[in-house]
Every structure is written in C-alpha cells, then in structure tokens.
Image (cartoon, rainbow, N blue to C red; front, top):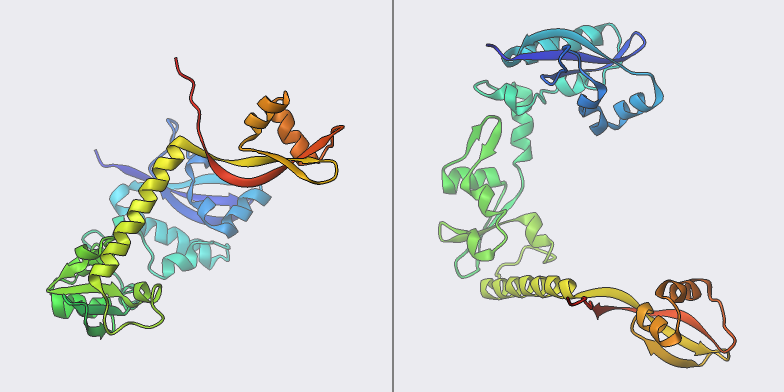
Length: 288
C-alpha cells in the first residue's frame, strides 16, 4: 500500500499563510493544529497564529514520495493570487528538505549556495606544528589532499569535515598534517600562527577536561550557598555562618526565617543578618 501524505494550508478567513505537508492525520483524515509544528519555527507565521483565528485545511492527499511537486503547485497557485505565503520564497530558493533530494539533482541556484557555504578557510600544519598552507576553502583541501569530496543527498562529505570537528588535537592528524579552520585558530590566536605547539595544546586540553570532571564531581557533593553574616547594631561583624541552615540552628530560627531577615534587612534587638559570599558547601546527606 502506497504511503499517503496530506498537503495542507494554514489560513485565516479566505487568506492562506502557509502550505505544508504531513502524514500525521487523525482517524478522520484531519490534521490538528498541534500536528502543524513548522509555524512555531517561523516568527512571522507564529504572529499569524497568535493574532488570528486559524484553520488547517486539507488541500489534497497525494502519494508520500510525490508530495513535493504537489506542494509546490499549491504554493505557486496561492502566491499568484496574492496570498501572503511565508514559505513561498523559501521554496523558490530551492530549500526543499532532504527527503526530496534522494536520487535527485539539486537546481543550479541551490548547488551554487551549497558551494559558497564550503568556502571556509582551512589551515594545515605538519606533524611538527609548522604551518604548511592556508587553503582558500575546506572544499579545496578536501578535493586536492583527501580526494574524497562528494555530494550525497545534497550534503557535502569528506573525511576533512570530521577532522576539523574533532575535539582532541590528536584526532585532527591525517595525511601527516593537523587540520583546523581559520576561525577555530583565531579564537585562541589573533592571527594564524606560523607554528603551533601540538604537545602544549594537547596538555592544555587534558587539563581543561580534568578541571571539568573535578568540577562535576564537586557539584555532586557540594552545592553553592550564601554565607550568613551577623552584625551588631553598630555595624560590626560579629560572626559568619557557612549557610542559612547553620545560622538558623545557632540562632534558634528556621532556615527560611534566616533568609527572610537577610532579604528584608530586618533588625532584631541586638543584631541583623545579611548575605555574604556565595561558596560551595558540602552537602550533608541523611543516613539510614
């Protein structure tokens, strides 16, 4: 049985604002507004939903593998009759979703835009960290060095693209070279350096990971809490308590009352309390 898709229209009154496609219909073949998710990603269309009484109209049912052409026809027809469709230009620009492009060729306009997006400068260092070349684009390096550049379902693929996304420095080594984008290097250096210290970069990276792990472990056993400062009525610091709970225990107050005194600046007959520095304090757990 051929899978069916519904081409729907989002409209207020007689005016259409968006043409979409879904295969998620209820048992009566209707599309509910909760299934129409795309509009919330588009600020202008979201405003239409918020400011108008919206209807979701089923325009036609089509085979799922042919939905694009039918949807495009609906968009063109509505656009010609001056309906303010928010996705008309988007579709005309060739942004058509990955499922459409399987086994098909993109139009020249979209291919050109894809090509432009790959022109991010790529930097190559040898295994000793010495600058070899600044490539005009990752695409150029992928073609001339890796020799594996290809477009699959409209997406550019090469081993190089995976390398420059690698977190660990040692995982960026290929073809006896380390690979970075120019943008990545400029986050750490003002200019692209002629030489980088691979060992020092790897060590710094390990230390950052170690600090992050230590911080995560501390957060499991500690929690950030404000110190409580106790002053006499002349403004002299009398005592510091590590937490509101400890202050309450020492003063005979509840923890919430201590916090209230700090927030409102209320004075007792002999002292007042304020918040101090926020510090990590050990978490005390009840034992059974």
